[in-house]
Image 1: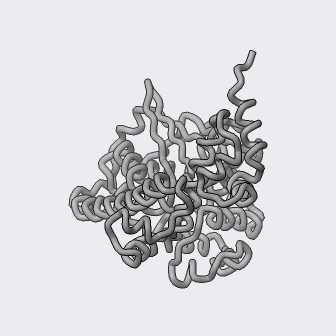
Image 2: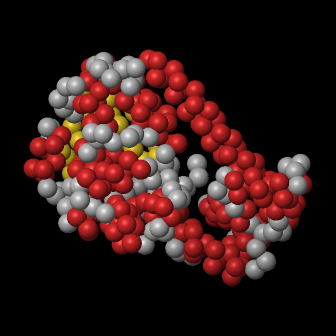
Image 3: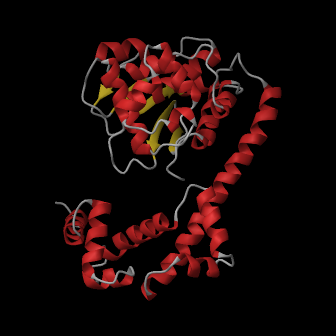
Length: 337
């Protein structure tokens, strides 16, 4: 999934309602003004910067809860609108999980077991960076608000787990209506499984019949974009050991012109150099995990002309040398007593 997030107008509207000017957020977070003016996409790291800035501007660590609860009269994105008009809470959560990727590179994981349902949301392009707590709050609270508004009932989770250190416990437990555990392994929202069967008063079958085909079509287009990237990376993997492949040779193997491939990549927010770097990074980790390969061999197999070029690229990927990564990887693989 491409690392692109188009910030919905609904978010800017909610910020205005809590007294925050979108232009101030953009300026402090050092995000291009086109994100507001033209709806230009931002990266995951830029989106994280926006949520960190919200806390600084508002001086309110719980700003995520306030933003998520400002729903009345806000025009929802289609991917969230279908959840609001779902048959019941389970149906709504499943639709969020299915269509969320149309808005942002998020993975909504829903696991039902015995009498409970756990929900965990992960950011695909977080690069192991900590997700801003305010964004976690807004995400989990939006799911709870979806259930409360849809069922028109004071829905209370079984529990909430937050990966951050404890802070403002009273504020969070008052909002959620349940105990909050800090220092958890993941941010997690847990509901009673029976709550998922509660019907939505906002259920609208006719509207869903109109919206679902449109969103399914968008998902199919998104899947096609991903398949093009995988095709390019597959060719790159085959050609790297013969030297540094160029876009012309890759296009030829994919039975298209260089100009056509370049246009398709541009239309889908991709670059040939970006895919080449991703492929090399992926292969570098696989090769370094093999102790039989010396580092100079790995550099050659990745199509680098010299070892120093590989070292510079690897530092950009992993913020450490190939030797340090390999040593750390070996330590992690050693059996523990």
